[in-house]
Length: 54
Image (cartoon, rainbow, N blue to C red; front, side):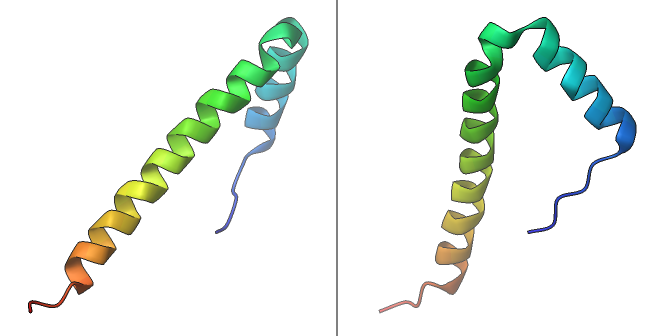
């Protein structure tokens, strides 16, 4: 997995964290749920594609 982020995106993220420090863990939780959801969809699709008929 390769992480790509631009400098303006980093600056915006830092500003957002500074402005809403209390919501940092909520932001992380939402991002994790989104990332895990995408991973599970891809994994499920790959399992179904590779499933052999019996």
